[in-house]
Length: 338
Image (cartoon, rainbow, N blue to C red; front, side, top):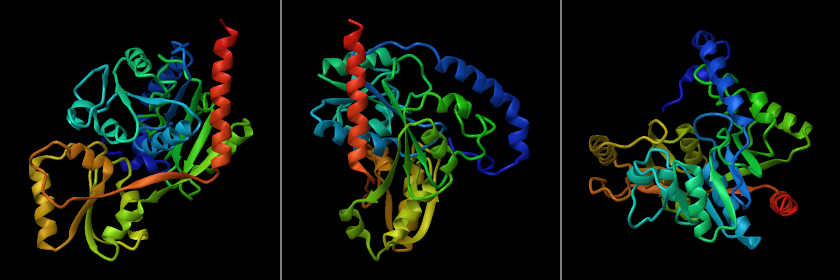
């Protein structure tokens, strides 16, 4: 879905009118969040967010994958496969699956880490453990109580923040903020903005870590496009951030076309994008996530360039200590209850 603009406007009449529905939705979600979940038997780290839409969960999962491997762990990602037709449980295979099967994010992540897709998370746990997982990384699912989480790391875009702070559909929040804060074990702030400073201060007051990170463009991607004119398109949570990132790298963004998050491009849309780029002698560029949705199709125009980014934490030593502490406490708790 494309986020409505009024979510990021204070005192919007639309938000006011939808507030009763938001209060009902929030109350139901908050009540579900306190339910006791199933113990997977191995540590479960959840990477989630407080709101609908994108914030940087996938790059965070990939960064944690790298760290966990450095710690000697064998992580497997557990995803619901949003947008895919397969209910699972199934291990993602880039040679066999497309985004229409298992969603764009699993297809993107599987290049770096095994990914189990399952609508029923308990089935996904069993499949992940059968692959030798020592740690399960949940991609989303913070508000879902089915699986016990040993730690929940919440990702926020520091430039966008949480909008008007109201619960869906009056605003972007998935549940009342207070209920979500109480179940947060760490906050990951992406970028250099200040829109989430109040949330970060509250997490710090609760004696929970606040970790800062930045999305760093891949050097090869920048070199390929530096100084050239491009037509950028994206169907992610915040396309404008992608467009700004290109410009900040010295890439001349002549045209842009935003789409809704997880947008499944039609043949006609792709042909129109390619025709406009060719007519104006521009290079078509998009995100790796968008390109993952195009993988395996025979109607994709040639010459679309992916722009790769990766998440870099500002204080790796603190991140390493925090994750190690989560893992130690998770295993200690299970050992003490035997």
